[in-house]
Image (cartoon, rainbow, N blue to C red):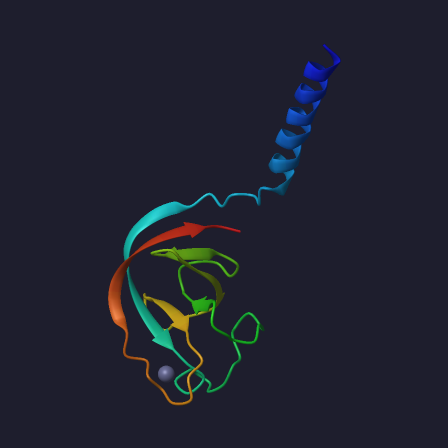
Length: 115
Ligand SMILES: [Zn+2]
Protein backbone atom coordinates (compact mmCIF):
# COMPACT_ATOMS: atom_id res chain seq x y z
CA UNK A 1 0.00 0.00 0.00
CA UNK A 2 2.83 2.38 0.91
CA UNK A 3 4.50 1.60 -2.42
CA UNK A 4 1.37 2.59 -4.33
CA UNK A 5 1.19 5.85 -2.41
CA UNK A 6 4.84 6.54 -3.19
CA UNK A 7 4.22 5.95 -6.86
CA UNK A 8 1.22 8.27 -6.81
CA UNK A 9 3.27 10.90 -4.98
CA UNK A 10 6.09 10.58 -7.52
CA UNK A 11 3.60 10.88 -10.34
CA UNK A 12 2.11 14.04 -8.78
CA UNK A 13 5.59 15.53 -8.34
CA UNK A 14 6.30 14.78 -11.98
CA UNK A 15 3.08 16.46 -13.14
CA UNK A 16 3.81 19.57 -11.05
CA UNK A 17 7.43 19.66 -12.21
CA UNK A 18 6.54 19.35 -15.90
CA UNK A 19 3.78 21.91 -15.43
CA UNK A 20 6.18 24.48 -14.02
CA UNK A 21 8.87 23.81 -16.60
CA UNK A 22 6.59 24.36 -19.55
CA UNK A 23 7.27 27.82 -20.95
CA UNK A 24 4.11 29.88 -21.17
CA UNK A 25 2.59 29.23 -24.51
CA UNK A 26 2.10 32.16 -26.81
CA UNK A 27 -1.46 32.75 -27.83
CA UNK A 28 -0.97 33.19 -31.56
CA UNK A 29 -3.67 34.96 -33.52
CA UNK A 30 -3.67 34.28 -37.23
CA UNK A 31 -3.92 37.48 -39.27
CA UNK A 32 -3.58 35.98 -42.75
CA UNK A 33 -1.11 36.64 -45.53
CA UNK A 34 0.98 39.77 -45.01
CA UNK A 35 3.60 41.32 -47.27
CA UNK A 36 7.08 40.67 -45.86
CA UNK A 37 10.07 42.79 -46.78
CA UNK A 38 13.57 43.12 -45.30
CA UNK A 39 15.80 46.02 -44.34
CA UNK A 40 19.34 46.37 -43.12
CA UNK A 41 21.61 48.99 -41.52
CA UNK A 42 22.33 50.37 -45.03
CA UNK A 43 18.75 50.99 -46.13
CA UNK A 44 17.44 51.82 -42.64
CA UNK A 45 16.31 55.44 -42.39
CA UNK A 46 18.44 56.94 -40.89
CA UNK A 47 21.27 54.49 -41.74
CA UNK A 48 22.48 52.28 -38.91
CA UNK A 49 21.19 50.05 -36.18
CA UNK A 50 18.89 52.52 -34.48
CA UNK A 51 15.20 51.75 -34.18
CA UNK A 52 12.29 54.00 -33.20
CA UNK A 53 11.91 52.07 -29.93
CA UNK A 54 15.55 52.71 -28.98
CA UNK A 55 16.51 49.05 -29.29
CA UNK A 56 19.65 48.27 -31.29
CA UNK A 57 18.60 46.43 -34.42
CA UNK A 58 19.62 42.81 -34.90
CA UNK A 59 18.20 39.74 -36.58
CA UNK A 60 15.02 38.78 -34.73
CA UNK A 61 13.67 42.32 -34.78
CA UNK A 62 11.21 43.71 -37.28
CA UNK A 63 9.42 46.94 -38.16
CA UNK A 64 5.72 47.53 -38.66
CA UNK A 65 3.58 50.66 -38.57
CA UNK A 66 0.28 49.00 -37.64
CA UNK A 67 1.48 46.77 -34.77
CA UNK A 68 2.65 48.12 -31.38
CA UNK A 69 6.27 47.69 -30.31
CA UNK A 70 6.74 44.46 -28.39
CA UNK A 71 4.33 42.49 -30.56
CA UNK A 72 5.69 39.07 -31.50
CA UNK A 73 5.06 38.02 -35.08
CA UNK A 74 5.27 34.41 -36.17
CA UNK A 75 6.09 34.33 -39.86
CA UNK A 76 5.68 30.72 -40.96
CA UNK A 77 7.45 29.46 -37.83
CA UNK A 78 10.09 32.18 -37.44
CA UNK A 79 9.43 34.58 -34.58
CA UNK A 80 10.30 38.28 -34.69
CA UNK A 81 9.67 41.15 -32.28
CA UNK A 82 8.34 44.48 -33.53
CA UNK A 83 10.71 47.22 -32.34
CA UNK A 84 10.61 49.73 -35.18
CA UNK A 85 8.25 51.55 -37.50
CA UNK A 86 8.10 50.91 -41.22
CA UNK A 87 7.46 53.29 -44.11
CA UNK A 88 5.21 50.82 -45.91
CA UNK A 89 2.29 48.63 -44.81
CA UNK A 90 4.56 45.55 -44.87
CA UNK A 91 6.25 43.81 -41.96
CA UNK A 92 9.92 44.67 -42.46
CA UNK A 93 12.40 42.14 -41.05
CA UNK A 94 15.81 43.45 -40.02
CA UNK A 95 18.74 41.49 -41.48
CA UNK A 96 22.38 42.22 -40.69
CA UNK A 97 24.33 42.02 -43.94
CA UNK A 98 27.60 43.63 -45.11
CA UNK A 99 25.91 45.06 -48.17
CA UNK A 100 22.27 45.74 -48.83
CA UNK A 101 20.54 42.62 -50.14
CA UNK A 102 17.04 43.65 -49.23
CA UNK A 103 15.12 42.23 -52.15
CA UNK A 104 12.60 40.03 -50.35
CA UNK A 105 9.04 41.05 -51.07
CA UNK A 106 6.55 38.24 -50.63
CA UNK A 107 3.29 37.41 -48.92
CA UNK A 108 3.56 35.01 -45.99
CA UNK A 109 1.20 33.58 -43.40
CA UNK A 110 1.53 35.59 -40.21
CA UNK A 111 0.30 35.08 -36.66
CA UNK A 112 0.75 37.68 -33.91
CA UNK A 113 1.06 37.62 -30.12
CA UNK A 114 0.30 41.03 -28.66
CA UNK A 115 2.30 42.20 -25.62
ZN1 LIG B 1 19.10 46.89 -47.09
